[in-house]
Image (cartoon, rainbow, N blue to C red; front, side):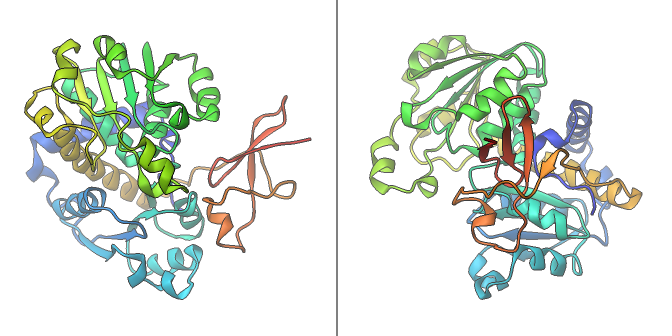
Length: 363
C-alpha cells in the first residue's frame, strides 16, 4: 500500500504548511513545474457528478506535464456491472500512477486505498470527507488574510451533511486561536460526534446560532455551504430547508472589510450573484487555489510513492464486535468488506467505523 490522502488529519500541520508553500510557488513560477509529472498518469474515478473537482484534478495533472484517464459517470464504468471498489482499485493500479476517487458511499476511497498499489486521493465520499477541498480552503484563507491563526470562522448552512465543513474543522483545529461560529437550522446542525471529537478534543471555542445576521460582524471568514439535495432521504425536508440562508449584499453591510467569503461550490441560490462584485467574495479565487493545491498534492504523493513512504495506518481496530448500520457506508453495498471499528474513547467504550465514522458503543 502506498501513502494516500483519505482524511485531512493524515497530514501533519507541517506537511500542510509545506503544501501551501509549494502551491504559492507554483502560482508564481508555473513553468518550473510544467514537466514534473511527464510520463505519469492520473486516473479520475468519479462515481458521483462533479465539475470543478474533477476538472481541477485533470487541469492540475495536465499543467504538471502528466496525462489523465478515467470516467465521470459511474454508469459508464464496470461498477454498473457490479464490480467492487476493491477490484476497480486493483485494475486501475495497472493503468495509472495515482488515482482520485469521488464516490457517494462513505469509505469507498479508503477501501480503494487498501487494495490499490498506487496512491489514492479522496475527492469526496458521501457526507464524510473532502480533504482536497480543505487544502483549497486553507490556501484561500492563507492567501487572502495572510494567516491561518487568530481567526473567527463562521460556517453557514448544511453543517450536518457538509463534508467540506467537517474536513475544514478538523484542519483548523490544529491551528492557534481559532474561534468557530456554527450557523445552521436545528435540523442541519453540526453532528455531535464532530463537536466532541474535533471541537472539544482541541478545546476550540465555538458558539451555535441560527442567525447569520447576528454572527456577521465578528467573522474573519464566512464559509457558506449549499443545502445538498443529494444528501436528503426526504424531498419534503429538503424543500423546507433549502432556502434557510441566502447571503445578499445588504447582509454584508455589517461585515468587516477584510472578511472573506468562501464557498466550495457549486452554489444554487445561497449567495446572490450581486455578492460576486464584492472584493470580499473569494470563492472563485478559491477554485483556482484548489487546482494549485492539487498540483502540490499530486507531486507529494508521487514522490512519496517512489520513496516507499508507507500508508497511513489506522490503529486500535476491532473487527468482530460490531456491524456498521449506516446505510451510506460502503459496507452496506459491498458485503465482502470486513466491518472494522477504531476505538476513540476506551473509557466510555466508543468506537467508530473506519470507513464512515458511524458510532458504536460497546455494552
